[in-house]
Image (cartoon, rainbow, N blue to C red; front, top):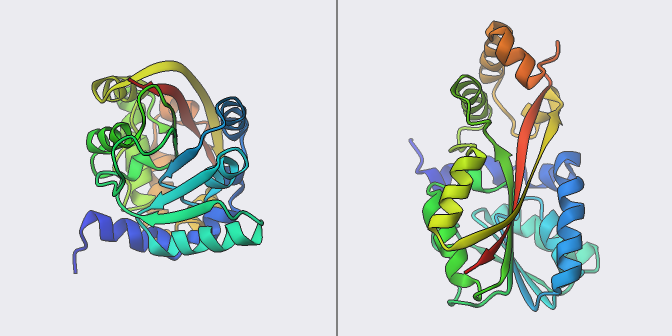
Length: 254
């Protein structure tokens, strides 16, 4: 049976929710440290973590905000995030199952929003950003963090191919230029942008998503057959480990 995209996302991530809670790639990083600094300054009343995944942004928000909503498409993900929050002694966090494109919240109901490593799974980035803008109060801050494309076709094709092979719910890693255009079109002013690179240990990268062995074999085939330019850009290692680009946008809802 062919699944709709939302059902595909739910099935891909629901069974692996605990893996994302425990993943070092997701549970730490300079981007979380930056987000912590922003939250300390803003001290929001009600904050939204859009596409919570392992819940790491929501847990961080909870130490600075009066109330936090962790939103995600997967019930299983939200169940793990909710129980992890209780185990951490966090009691100002609630969960909400919903897609980014259809947020079940009133207009202007949050004064802070963050989304981390989620937007590349949204079926429609424009609708998701429009909804994020709608539920934010005017002049409220929003931070968007995601894996990104370089914007160079040679590298972009390789990136999107291996991402889709690893995880069939993948939609697109957008380039910084695509992000900036989409944010601007949907009412956000861009205050700052940061870029950095993340090393993906190949074995844990595919294990975290339970990528089928035949798909793993095709990823390795693409890596081994890649041009020198592609191999150099992603710094592909002998075991398949490589570097991904990431981007952070600090924005304001206008």
